[in-house]
Amino acid sequence: MNVAIFLTFFLIGVAYSVPTWQEEHDLHDEEIWEPADPQPLVEHHVRFKRATCDLFSFQSKWVTPNHAACAAHCIARGNRGGRCKKAVCHCRK
Image (tube, rainbow, N blue to C red; front, side, top):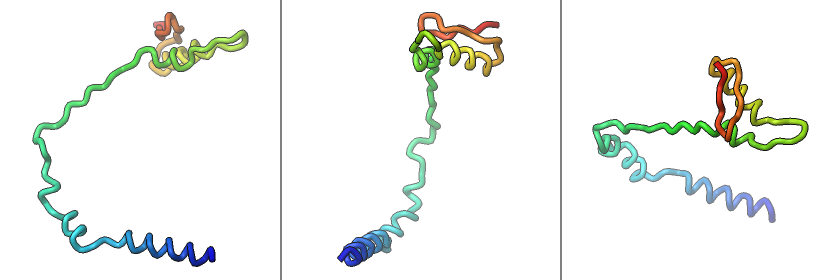
């Protein structure tokens, strides 16, 4: 019984995965590949200054990961370290 159900679903999947001639012909149509707008899109990147301190903003008696994450971020940028002040990472020079 299980083999018959499996075989049925397998054959249905194979039947749906075989492309027809019309779909294959439409995929190679040159009109589809023309750009809609000749001007390239301008992307604007947003920089979130508070991400390092906000993601690691919890504190406890034993560990304060927000300052460690900020310090690692600043060291990666080439500074000597840093601290979180009011949820903003301030790097030392």
